[in-house]
Amino acid sequence: MGDRWHIEVDRSVCIGSAQCLHHAPDAFRLDSARQSHPLSPDTDATEPVLQAAESCPVEAILITLAGSGEAVFPPEE
Image 1: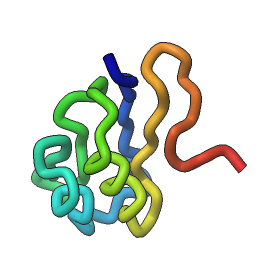
Image 2 (image 1 turned 180 degrees about the vertical axis):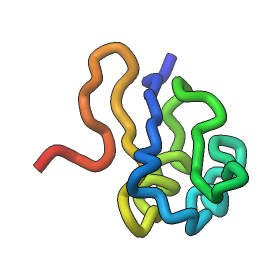
Image 3 (image 1 turned 180 degrees about the horizontal axis):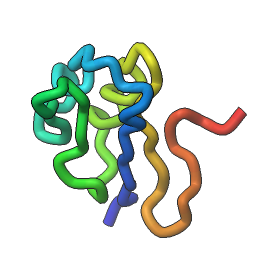
Image 4 (image 1 turned 90 degrees about the vertical axis):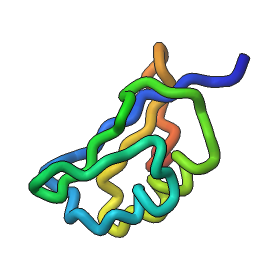
């Protein structure tokens, strides 16, 4: 079984670019205020979800390992 990720979107940073929807339409949605939300905060680790986080122009998507909370994206400096 693969890793499980916890996904959060920092709504104070999200600008509604919808890049996350472009890369991972099964993982994110935009609300009426054009703010991104993960469809399921805890999900299997997948390349599209990582691409969505990496493509966010303001790095509003935070991914951690479910359980440990270890940073996946953005990586710790």
